[in-house]
Structure formats: structure tokens, C-alpha cells
Length: 342
Image (cartoon, rainbow, N blue to C red):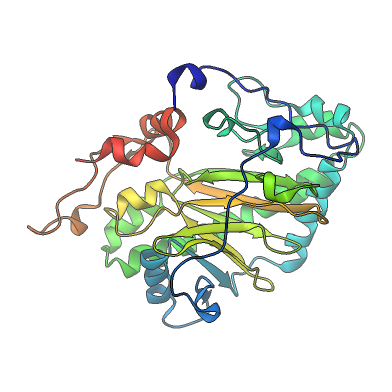
């Protein structure tokens, strides 16, 4: 991809979905591709593992899923279904606002929060059938712009959701480190770190020609891992070597966990930073909520020494400050990991 193309800034304004759209505009028209899985892959094998957090062997099940898939679905996670439905309802309330109203919360140039298109858009020649809203901490400032007289409910639901997801994320991280046989001191060092958190609300409106549109282009997440709730059918797809793109069919009440680049580095490549994308459909307006859990920007990240202390297991990645890695990812997207290999 040419550097001249990367220097061209996409507009930060999503397509105006208020208006009836009878055909996908050229700006959003992606080439049609065959998305069917390839190879000898039975229907029964296609689903990513589902992990019950009450299972006494939960750490092992999660560890194997991270190694083999880079993703799993988790049940008995402690996040009330009622809260997930409330978050979904508030997300739909936001995305159903008139475009002129949503524009009042437009993400500022170089900013991280608010309404806008995916931040990975500059890496692709076509735009995505997507509108998003990013929250880091309290959403009150943007919410006041959207609902001057009725913003408290949105803020209350989103803040409650973030608290529950943070608790779940810490629990999952401890289980992962436990399975890797990391010492208690190392678990405390990592888990006591003030992690960075972000909540992304995603909207995928119904599309007149879903085969020629892309909800979210293929990418890996930069985070330790991402916890996703998707509603109303499946739209998330994961790439699995030797098979191709596989649709993640929702399990009732479950949340999806994707391994990100930072956990891939910490595990010395043992856990897979999974390539994923989102597709759209003709009849449904689908929303999803993604919670990103990562280390602070000022932290150094490197393969954990206890995973690289033998002749056969040398560090595959150099030590790097999280902020520096984020900057590399912002410039090189899915090539970022290869640029810090030793």
C-alpha cells in the first residue's frame, strides 16, 4: 500500500444512514469474495470453544482456546443479561438519533472518543458500512451533546457496564496467567497495573448489497484482549489458518473474548492475536459492544521471562513501550507485530 494513499485522510463522518440507501455507493463498495470455509472442516468443528467460568478446569480450557483459536465464548461470566440488554438499548437509542444530532458528538481530529468511522479506515481504499461511538471513562460530555435533557440514563448504563467488564477482564487475565504457570508475584505485578480501558459501540445498519459491503475490515486488536457482546444474529468472523473465515454464532448470554497483540507479545506468540472482521446483512440493523482491556501506554511490554528461559524458547519480540507499539500499529496495522520481532 503506497505511502501517498496512507497520507490521504478519510472523512471522519459516517455515511448518512438516515436516508434510504437503495444501492451501495462506490465509496463503500468492496469486491465480492467467497467467504465459505475451505478444507476438511465439519459443521461440528466450526464453533470457537465455549468456556464456563464455573468449570473447575476453566484456566486450562481458556489457555487451550487462546493457543488454538485466539478466541472463545464465555458463559457464567457474572455480567447480568439485563445490563447487556440495557447497553444494547442505549446503543440503539444513540445510533437511531438523526445524523445532525450524532454529529454534535463527532470525534475530534486525533481524538479517541465520540462518534465517527473506524480508526482503521485509512488503511483501506473503501469505507466500511459502520458507525461507531467510543467511550473512555465517563461519557458525560458527549452524552450531553446528544441528549441535553436526558443524558443521565446513558451515562449510568455505560459506566455500570464498564465496571462489570473491568471486573470480568481481571478475572480472565488471572486465569490466563495461572494457566501459563506465571508466579503469584508476576500475576500481582500485571494485574495490579492500572490498565487502560475503552468501550466501543458499533452500529451495522441493514445493507442493500451485503456481499459488496464490509462492516469492519480485517484487523487484529492492539489490546491484551477484547470482550465483545453481539446481538441479533452473527456478524463477527474470525480467520483460522487452513480454514479461512468462520462466523462466530452467538451463544445465548455469552460474551466473546478475542486475544489482542499485547497478550500475543506477553505470551511470546503462544497465544494468537486473532484476525477478525464484521460482515453486514440485508435485513437487520445489528449492534455490538467491544470492551478493550490493555496495559497503560507508559508500560513496557515484552515476552514474559518465564516463557523464554530455555534454549528452545528465545524471545520472539523486543521489549517495547505500549505507546510506541500503539504508534507502530497506527501506521502499519496488521504488519505491526512483524516489525518488532527479534
